[in-house]
Image (cartoon, rainbow, N blue to C red; front, top):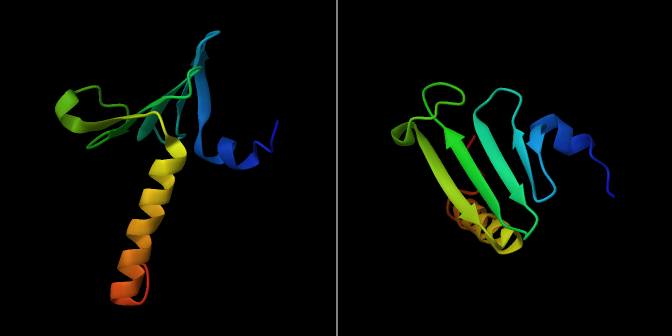
Length: 88
């Protein structure tokens, strides 16, 4: 397996089974379930960490993470082409 140094900086395993791994970021603003079929359920919380109110979070079901990463990179490239830098 690969180096887990970066993943530990962003994610901590909180539960797992034979079929899935549940992780959270250290501050509690993100939670993900990585499933054995390659899909990921990603949740981002607003207002307070680990807020389970559905109106206070975004949920994304991802089955092709590589395509999503490429699309996000393309969005960043559009912004950089327009403004000359990525806004901070």
